[in-house]
Amino acid sequence: MKIISLILMICITAMFPNYLLAKDFIAHCRDYPPELYFKDNKCVGAVPELVNDIFTELGHNIIWVNASWLRSLKDAKEGRVDLLIRHSMTPERELILRPIKYADRMRKLSFFKSPALTSEINSYEDLEKVVVGAIRGVFYSPKFAKLDTRRMIFVEKTEQLVSMLELNRIDIAVSSASHNRELFENRFEESSFSDTFYNPLYISIPKSSAAMKQYDDVASLMLKYRKNNNIDKYFKKHGLEIPSQFFNDSPKKEPLQ
Image 1: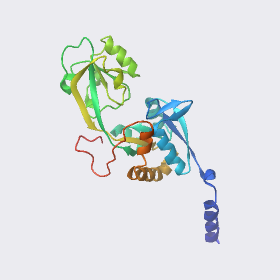
Image 2 (image 1 turned 60 degrees about the horizontal axis):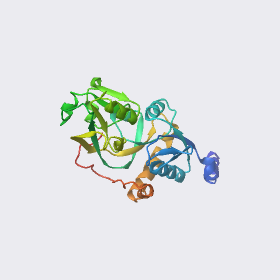
Image 3 (image 1 turned 180 degrees about the vertical axis):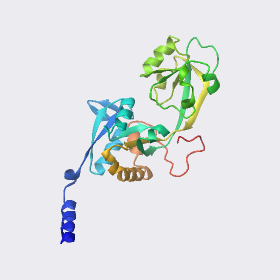
Image 4 (image 1 turned 45 degrees about the vertical axis):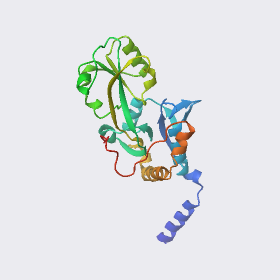
């Protein structure tokens, strides 16, 4: 009798429309156009559109919240967000996040000099001798992360770095295509030294989130999208370079673990 009841419950559940089984998950969005940004109280761009389609295909809904990256990490630790998008991974982040890769890329860090700095920067050893400005909470590169932070100044926004560099309050500002490099170009001298490394991009489900129950389904569908080149259309739509996809070994560069 118990077996018959169980079978009936399974059959009835299978007959439910998807919207009755759908779950709402909270995802954080930040302003990083054209890959993601808020417009008319909606998160738009290549990455949120990809994420929306993934979760819709699985029968779930995304509720987008505009939040800074620092708030996202804090909420992830405390179980107040279900999904973070477009980020790198570090050992510290892996303690609280389960990552799902959606793109592979090489990333280049550039270093811009203040008007008062006359010496050249040729290495990370040279950077240790000057005052470097960076955005608080941002991961730049594995080597950059090893710099002595006691000689660094952290700010909240790129515009603050630009002002501080112009006023000679810092000697060097670090930037990349991911961090508004265009605000420094043609305005400040760029050091000949740069740092290029392998830097895949992820969405992640916090380990403290109820969405962890959907992790395997999301990861499996994302992998299918990657292998079928379905991800390309989201980047083409927004005029972005189509990301590489590596399914075996990463390029022969320093990997980000």
